[in-house]
Length: 614
Ligand code: AGP
Image: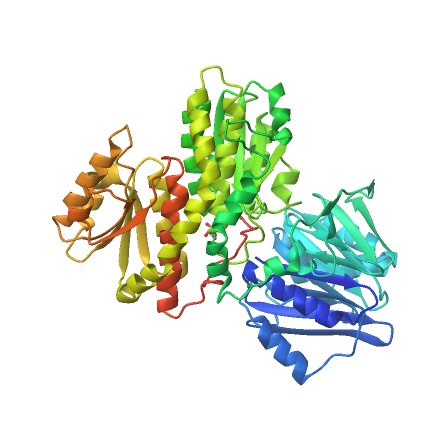
């Protein structure tokens, strides 16, 4: 999704803007641009299709004059192909006004038709340019840039974060947001606007969240916020709990490699201060739920987050004895779900900006449900619109494909389950102590699992030309299989599919032919539900048909050895800890196969880190 940065202050702003865009590259984009305003020059712009380096090269070849006010943008094309004309910023008012946008303006065509009747024609294919002309028109009538943007946003439908600057107003940037992210960075004699705190965290870790339907005006001296109807607002200040170095690669070859390696720490940090071995959960932010009689939990999420939620649903039913289900966010509200005041809707979202999930949360709240967010991004929109939030403390996840957020989300779901279990009369204290003790030991076991990296890299080399990989799992291993398949799809662009192992004989086994690679997540042989024996039978069935089986199984599991071509051993662990261990070789495999194919593991094609459009 698009990246947005704005700056007002005393420093030459171009380096600040470009560095901010670099920190937002992970959001996925296909063009970039800047606009600078300075008392000593006309408004200056540069914008280019392609990666940020193309713009940087352009700026080196045709330098702009220094300026202390500016806005910058990386565009992920929605309306119109990625080219120089469609890149942001878009200009109006005889080139004196520049505007950038993240989101989709749904009524752009009718507004464009209205402008055309007044002789104002758009030169680009974008929805954004319409907003630029509307703001310019309102500015000519009011002479006030904030008022002009405020009047304009009242006419827009859809999702938008807009920033606007004008040649007549150096030292001023105005922003507005609906359904797309916008945060303010508060500096000394300088202030920032951005889609994400990563853009300015090296300059300041003090930030403000801009709420739904709000307009923000920044100058070097201060920040003012109003609602779209002009009512003043006092936004909450928060402190970013990580520093710029955390958003750097730290010596790793890729953010993907770095973030896979950070999974033990992400889990440890998410548990820290919240869980003790006796099963006591400290999550005061959830105390609002005590006023509710929760009888059902529905998770809403997309992609990897949905797979974490699937594991969470097992834990809710196992430990808290509460019926739990998982809905893909984009399906949830369209199936007219039965939701009431006894329903707890739990959103799982790394970015906290996924539009599908945000809309699902809104639908749930409108129908009386309690809402809890599990999120990795402070001040994001979904937490702001939820009754309570369990923040995962995984640190910034920059690589587009999610890894450490997944394991942190699983653990956050477990914390929720244990919190609710403490309130449940028929919950087993013994079970809660067992899982709590096991979870607190999990980070060390996850660190041990990272040691399989070299072996996985070797395997990936001989599989580099494969065209299909299947993943099987059962119970909490089934979402792990789905997650492993998704990683291979999004990182190595290889068709991969995850199945519940029990489903194999109901059709998918027809896919098995000699040489078909199949990863199998094998439950512990100590598992009382005898799922282990059933999965070993599944391995025998596919091996008999020529599959190449890579089993992820508990160390010492002798039953698997005769039927697997490769065995990746995991340390003996609680059944609900196994997903945290088994997923690591699958994350590593997706990355290593992509690297073997020479692909960009941090910014895979077609993908965006946060899908802020429906
Ligand atoms: C994960 O690797 C994918 N990039 C994608 O499935 C992601 O998990 C999904 O878009 C949800 O994003 P969120 O967690 O930010 O809501």
